Image (cartoon, rainbow, N blue to C red; front, side):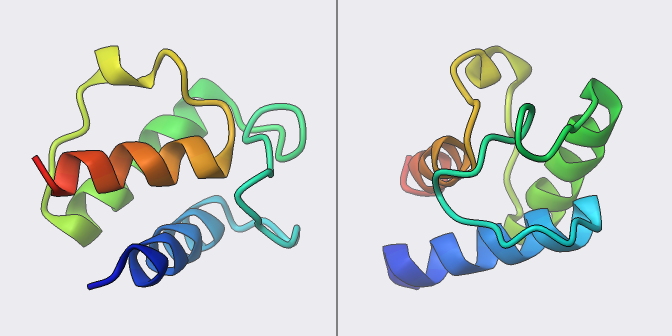
Length: 80
């Protein structure tokens, strides 16, 4: 899977998980643009973990604000 394919799949999981009607881009802010609550973020994380077979530690989420940040984090975990 290429980085671009991974990003596309991550954005697909985020869009499905949050049931948003917004067009999701790497610049989309998950809080100010999408209005996600902490519970919605946790559900989304669970779906990302299931989709990619990874564990996303809560401590690594501190700097995640945008969809692009989440893509980078998931890809980083996948390549570790």
